[in-house]
Image (cartoon, rainbow, N blue to C red):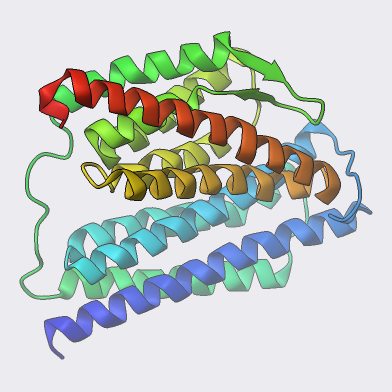
Length: 302
C-alpha cells in the first residue's frame, strides 16, 4: 500500500469515526431527556445536574467529532502525524464520554455505547495509518512564537474584561456581549492559532469569573469562532467577512445545539437569534472596523 493510500484511508476513517461519535452523543442526550419525561420540542425545566450532564455529554461528543474532522483535514494536507495526534485526543474524549453517564447516575443507551466505541475504533485505525504512513510531512516552525504567546495573553485578558464589563443579561438565560470582536481582531491580524486561543482562554476566564457552569462549551464555540477567520488572515476583505460570518455562525450554532437539550427548542431558538444576529453580528462589524484601522495605521499589518 502506498503512502497516499494510507492517508486516504486514514482521513476517511477519521471522518466516519467522528460522525459516529457525534451522532451517538446526541442520541444519548435525546434518550436521557426521554427517560426524564421531556422532549426537545417543549420548554425544558431541568435541575442543574441534569443540565450539566447533557451539556457535557454533547460537548465531549461534538468536540471529539470536530477533532476527527480536523485530523482528517491534516491527513488530506499531508500532515499525517498531526492528524494522528488529533485523532488520539478525540478518541480519548470519546472514551471519557462513555463513563460520563455513570458518573452522573444516568442510564447509558446501547446505541451510545456501541456507536462511540465503534467510532473510537475507526479513529484508532486512522491514528495507526497516520503514524505508519511513510515520509510524513512535518509542520514547519514553532507551534506558538513568543510574540504570539504575548499577544494571546494580552488579547485574552481584553476579551475577558469586555465580556465581564459589557454584558446584557438574557431572559432565556446567559448574557449577550460584543466582546467577540476581540476574537475576530486577533484572528484576522495574527492568524488562526492566536484567534483560536484568544477565543478559548478569554471566554473560559470570563465564564469562571461570572460563575457560568457550562464553561466547557465555550472552548468549542469560541475556539472555532477564532480559528475559522484566522485561516483567512491577509485575504481580501470579502473573504475575511465571509470567514467571520462562518465563525460567528459556528459559535452561535454550538450554543444553540446545547440549548436545545437544556432549554427546549422554543427558548433555544430565541437564544440562537440573539447570539447570531446581535452578539456575532455586531462583533463582526466592530472587529472588521478595528482591523481596517490597524492596517491603515500600522504598516506591518498590511
